[in-house]
Image 1 (cartoon, rainbow, N blue to C red):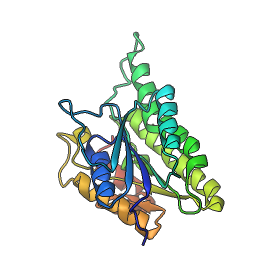
Image 2: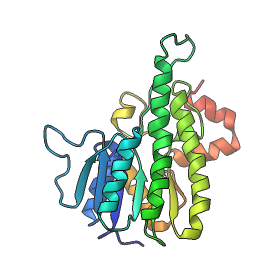
Image 3: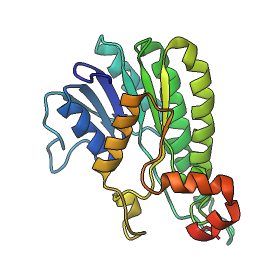
Length: 247
């Protein structure tokens, strides 16, 4: 079982939801946490005042912000032990009515940038900085990577793309001793899922599942209903489509 004390952990989307829970969990275990978020203040104060946490304002959709984030990691002078690509955005998009102003195209580009381009680029940039052997990259995907959600086409596409990227990345990095973990959240009680569904996991429960995956060396963690969805996709895709209400 790995010891997180003294390790360096980079978490994106760190100011709320699963990201906030991960920052709390790793800081509580003595890790040095680099917490990246578009907004790093709450009423003028950082959301976590732990000396274990360094906050960096970063819009991961922007290439320049990503470069500055990587520079901040490099300047610590320590190898990066864990990268958690957690930042994500989901928008309901209706593609049926035409888009004369190209507003939908902009929304799609933003989702792809945050959910797919950013984690792919951050993972690539962090490989030279990672501890080896022993480094880990965690990519947070979604159940819609397995079964598309009709109202969220760009989100579904981006998370499916991230899942495939994660699988290829794992194969490339295994000889370097860098582990790659896919985290597949079910509905988690965050701002993104407000007003949707029942029986949600708490962000703390999802963070705990990710940490257990790191401790056991798992290739994928899919807590809660996630395991059922993955099994149904294999056994009965049509039934899964009906149950998830994607059409």
